[in-house]
Structures are given as C-alpha cells and as structure tokens.
Image (tube, protein in one colour):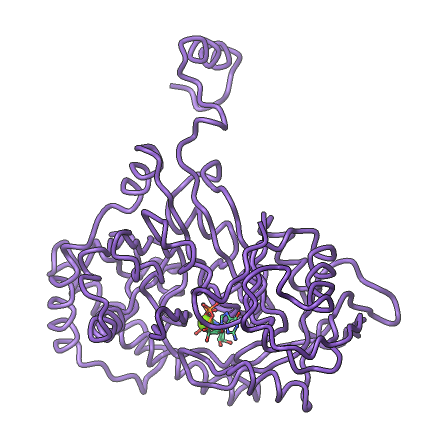
Length: 456
Ligand code: GDP
Ligand code: IMO
Ligand code: MG
C-alpha cells in the first residue's frame, strides 16, 4: 500500500464518507476538561480539580511526577497530593496516572498510605496506572541532588529543583535508557539487566553515586507486585472512556506554563510539557477530544526556586503576600517568592493553551492592601514588547508597566456570589478578565471547597 496521499485516496475517503464512516468534529467522542497552571505553579489547581471532581467519572494526571504538590481542603481536613490525582478524594471516580507521568513507586505508596490514615480508604482500588509511564528510581533522586550541587559549583547557581528525580528520569526517558511500568511487570530478569546498565551509566557520569543494586531490585519487585492490579494499557483505557457512554473526564495539570520545558523560563523549568500539548501526549488522546481548558491563576504571583520573576516584590508587600497567603511549598517546605499579578505571563500562557475560562484564586489574600498593582506590559529600552522573551538575560532586564488599583480593604472570605464582593474587588476582577481576554469563571476567596464564587 502506498503511503503517499493520492487522488485515489480522496475518492476512497469520499466513498467512506458516503458509507457513513467519516468522523466529524462533533462525533469524536467524549471531551476531556483540562485544568492547567497559568503561572509558575501553586495557583490552586488541586482545589479547582477537587471542585470539578465531585462530578467526574475519571480524573487523570498526564505529566510531571511528585514534584507537584496540590492541596485540597474538604470538611476542614487538608490533603496534599503529589502523584495521585486530586480527584482520588471522590469515592465515585476513577483516577488515572497517564504515560506522560514519571512515577517514584515508594513515593506513590507512601502518599497513598498517608492519605489512607487520613480516611481516604480504597484509593488503590480507584487508581489506574498506565503501563507506559516511566519509573523514577531512588538513584534518579540522588542524581537530581548531585546535579544541583554541580550547577552551584560550576555556575554559582542551581535551579532549585524539588530533588524528586524529575529531570534525571525524563532524561533517561529521552535517551531511551529509561524503564517503564510495563518493563517492571514483564520479564524481571530483563528488567534487572537494564536497571543495572542504567545504574552503570549514571555511575560513570557521577562516580560518587553508590547504589545497592540487589536491594533496589528486591524492593522494586515488591512494589511492582503491589502495583500490578492497578496497571492497564492507558491508551486503550482512555479510548474506551472517550468512546463509550457519556463520561465526565477531567485532566489535572501539574506544575505550570512558565515551568514548561518548551515554553517556560528555561532553564529554570521542570522537565515536562505542562501546557495543553502535554495532555495529548501524556494520555495518548487526540486533540479533538480536548474540551474546556481552564487556566488557574492566583490574584498575585508566586514562584518557588530560582529564575527571573519581573513582578517580584522584595519588600513589605512581598512579605505580606507570603505570610497572609501561607506561601510555603507543599512539596519542599520552601518559602515561595511573591509579587504582583503579572498579566504578561498569564496572557502568554493563554496564547499557548487557549484557555476557555480562568479560575482566579486567593483574591482574599489581597483584602488588606491599600493599593494593588498589576503588571500589564513589559518594556525594553523604554519600548513595549508584544511577546514574552525567551532569553533569561532579556527577561531580567524588562521593565514592568503597572496599573494601580485601590484596595477594597474588606474581608471577602465569606463572599459566595459576585454581588457579595466589594465594588473595588469586582473592578479588579473585570480588569483582569478584559486584559487576558478570557472569562473568569471562578473566584477563590478561601482554602476550602465552598470558598469559590462561580460566575457563570
Ligand atoms: P496547586 O499546586 O496549584 O494545586 O496549588 P497548591 O496547593 O500548591 O497551593 C495553593 C495553596 O493555596 C493551597 O494551600 C490551597 O489550599 C490554597 N488556596 C487555594 N485557593 C485559595 C483561595 O482562593 N484562597 C486562599 N486563601 N487559599 C487558597
Ligand atoms: P505544582 O503542581 C511550583 C519548580 C521547582 C524548580 C523547578 C524544577 O504544585 O504547581 P523539578 O523538581 O520539577 O525539576 O524543579 O520547577 N516546580 C514547581 N514549582 N509548583 C510546582 O508544582 C512545581 N513543580 C516544579 O521549584 O524551580
Ligand atoms: Mg503546588
């Protein structure tokens, strides 16, 4: 059969269409709803997913690993999720870890057991893990630390990674020496040989790396057996979910647009695609099945780790946002850097993701401020630039143009509908909406599930 597209093929397609076989955009199956971070992470994705997950049949993670930290507060109880989709709280929905995720098995079971003690029973019966997902080994985490030390020594600065082995695991995947869940559950002799080769490869790069290979293999075998009942062909599972009876499918993005390996503030980024393309590649689903894409943005900006941050406030405002917002990393316990809302980055995230609506979180944190600034444009040598700079030296040099708003100086935490918000807060929200050009669907005014104003 010829692989080139000929006039004859057109004829065949027309015949297929006539026979009713042609698929249109409208009958491509169920759509997935996607929740993505629109800044540098920790925007409150977990809370938005939790809100939507109460009605979801399937909640999926498609990229990242346990570098993510998603907090969900339900009935006064706080849960933090790293590898498990936040939807695991809903006993009626299935959670899926897709092929694009990198899994540290001890981390996964620790997280599950910790949540089990908090009352989240039966999580392992509701979890499905793709057999194509790559495994993060303990030595990947050690190497993550060694690479950070090396960067510090060579360049005088590191990335400030979470040291969860994310970079090294995705490097193994890209260099085709990585090992996947299907390998662990296949011929263990073959897996052991490839594991030893991988260890050897890293030891030749990092001579100080010591690995107790036999002990690791024994543990991995045990983890593999515990994992086995959860493992499926992720592509086929998603295909059936998309093409069976109507289903609500939710995808929980981890990390965020500005941490994306391609579009983020490289090299101060994570190692996966945290933008919408990662949903297709990380689950094995067609773009036609992407439905709503919700961007999550805080009413100000935070960042953990190193890297340019044009609206950062290294002053009393930054300190106030940090303390009032409890801006401490869920995964690493590090203080988050804080600054004014930067709409240049949110608009940039929208260019890439095509948000259909925005969830604006943590508005309540701004309640006490006399005035509030919003970054609306970047200038270079006194001239506005229309794009987000790729080069970090350039990004360090940009001058931010701000709009200033009067603070509302009112407690918004009890607001449950639009009309409960003070006019000045409404004004702030409407400005953001108009500037990004995307409707704001939710406004967050507190940690718990009910503290979310739904606008439409
Ligand atoms: P994620 O990584 O995007 O899921 O976000 P994190 O869970 O790392 O960080 C967001 C933090 O803000 C968590 O502690 C949430 O409980 C909290 N949070 C989310 N939305 C709101 C909100 O609207 N108001 C307040 N005060 N806290 C919120
Ligand atoms: P959630 O899903 C905030 C940051 C790290 C570091 C850089 C690279 O909770 O929003 P990595 O360990 O991924 O190699 O670290 O990326 N980072 C995050 N910052 N929230 C996250 O996830 C993050 N995931 C990675 O701090 O600067
Ligand atoms: Mg987080």
